[in-house]
Amino acid sequence: MAVAAIAAALLAACRHASGGGVGDADATDVSPRYRVVSLSPSTTEALFVIGAGNVVVGRSRYCDWPAEALKLPSVGGFVDPNLEAILSLRPNLVTGARGPAGSALKDNLEQHGLYTYFPETETFSQINAMILGLGEKVGHSAQARRTTMAIDRHVAAIEAAVAGEPHKRILLVFGLEPLSVAGPGSFADEMIRHAGGDNVITEGGAYPILGVERVLTLDPDVIVNAAIAEAHGQSRIGKDTPGWNKVRAVEKDHVVPITDESVLRPGPRVADGLATLARAVHPALNIP
Image (cartoon, rainbow, N blue to C red):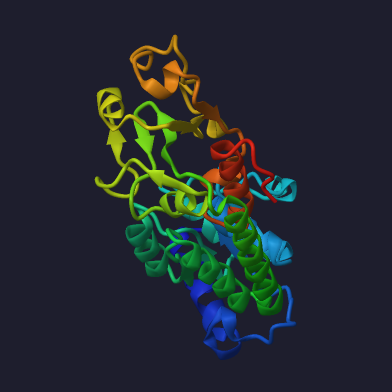
């Protein structure tokens, strides 16, 4: 079927839904009329955690948790989704985390009659709001509230565990080719603070690109290498890694590799990621 025809049918179906919106159902309604395509790991994980995995009909190629999500058809990536693949799944909601392509992608989807939800997730409060928003839209509000309350309790327990510890100056690395790090305004920047650390990156945006020479100037106490969690290209930082051997944290073996991808994802596992980060920063503490 042509894309235009599918889009027209989809738009009619969305308008026919009760009240004209996906989120108008009672919180206990888990009827099959919910059909969601999720284009980011954070929203996919949130839907499964709040008990709405059965309404997800499509995912991005990066959505790999929980294992059940991998059984769903992939519709491409976040910045390069396959529109025909999305339309063929007949969703009445397409969701994803807002990112560099968020506005343009949202507008394109809506021009084809799709109802969308692309919330910001760059703070812990925005992550909770995303989870609650999805709960409202797919009839799982109660489970969403319980999820956010559990996140808040876990975060508070971690903060209590690190309270009073000397703050370490942290460089959190997302990728090495190029060198992408956590900057101000990112959820990872807030995560560093909750973990009892200080981000050495104080300017340049949420996800700045640096050179190793800049790292030498910043002189972090600890380098948290989360690039290895995704393992795209080079992922190791060591004394034999070109350009890094003069960095003090590298010389003193204060580089902590993290393989837990929850550290990188602003979704329902954010407190688990925070615990992983806090253990890396304060290895002698008992972090819940």
